[in-house]
Image (cartoon, rainbow, N blue to C red; front, side):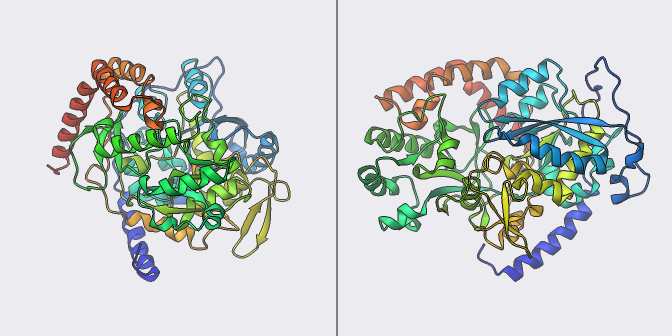
Amino acid sequence: MRTSLKKHLILLIIFSMVMALAVGCAPKAEGPSDEPATTDEEPAETPEPSDDEGEAAEEPDVADLEPYELTYFMLCNNVSPDADQIVERANEILKEKINATLDLVMLDWGTWSERFNTAMNAGEKIDIAFTADWWGYLDAVANNFFLPLNDPDDNLLEKYAAQTVKDLGEGFIVGSQINGVNYGVPTDKEFAVNGGLVWRKDLAEKYGFDMQSVNSIEDLEPMLKVIKENEPNIIPYLVEQGGGNYMIPFIDFFKGVGVSYDDLEDTEVKWFWDREDRIQMAKTHHKYYKEGYIHKEAYTENNRYNDHLLEGDFFVTQQPLKPMKGKSTELMSAAGNKFPLDEKEITPYVAHSLHAAGSMLAIPRTSEDPARAMMFINLMHVDAELANLFVWGIEGVHHKVVQEDPKRVAPIEGNTWTQAVLPWTLGNVFNHWLGEHEDPNKHEGFRMTKEAPAHITLGYRFINTQDYQAEAAAYDNAMSEYSSIMATGAVEDFDGTYQKMVEAAEAAGIRKIQEAVQADLNRWLEEQGKK
């Protein structure tokens, strides 16, 4: 990040040329060949694409396509009452491009898992669904929920999304694969993510806080004390139910078992709660909880963390960050720019598998027209009009244009759409218009993260989760009693509760899982010639 922009751009051009060549050599799928779930109705017929190379294969003859309604399960902050307006506009584009209409199912964070899993187990038609490594991706693949997208017999990526594959490059395409199989199309965004702090800039300036001097949670203590004593309607330190571990450099392979990413060569698998930095953060949270710096309901199931982010009734919180202060400006935009935010990076940018597959759109096996679903996903990447409709809504209703060239927009105060959507889940962020407060070099900064150093485990995933479902279920059950209260500090006796948690996790089988992941990682490293 310290080299000149000119040097970065030269490297970016070289990188893009190499990636374009490399993608053509990316491994083809050897994955499942099961047929999609059958229904009582005949699936809509989609003609074979053109035999021509490149973009010609991505442009279906709309006249030959039967009308089809795509069901899109979209993850969001909350369900917007304006969804019908967005769908109406989207349908105008989709009918012209791929003769399709949209059934948009918006699901918020608390609703998603039960609704999606229930629908899949019931065989409900879903054509497109959000997924991510940190959001049940491996479990969904293990449960056979998603179609392979680069199957040798029906390569949907190659047929209907060639330009998207080219734009994404090898890092995203290969980095998100499981045994050479793509089960999701990554969002084209920053390739590496780091962690740090986001805070209310106006409050920091009001009390003269030097936030750039903060390098740890412990450094916040005198500032939190001031906020607690002077701002009764502000949560001094907003904490997620899971503790918000973004300042701990950790790659979680399965059930809290993984390696450090600040050490690029680390291959020693540990359980998260064995790490000294995790224990220390939990102890600090325990102290802050007792002092009243952390909100009392932080550990409960009805934690409104995302609502607090949008309401701005907090001083500081941990967040995954983005280049050019992308996270704080993104949150400000989502909140309607009602309050100013700032941020500081703490952990380094490192490329690893959880980032490559950190945001994807998958095609469930219950889709009745996977080809049309892939056409939609491709449009979200290559059609700026469609992507920005989902990101910013309708001009004059949800956003206003504040600059024409290059285009900058601002959300209209009180609109319910821009606060609801998650732009980083929507296709190609490099096609998204910039918000009025965003750094003009935001996209260049995002591209530069493709230069981030790669962790030795980049490309590895623990895919044998089905062999440890009994232990995983027992572990989840045991940790449900301890994880949230320990992570947020809501305990009376920290040491005693920690010991009980460790004993419960070990009785459930966490050490068996840890040993299995270590052995599997060692095998993978040997196969890759890295050990």
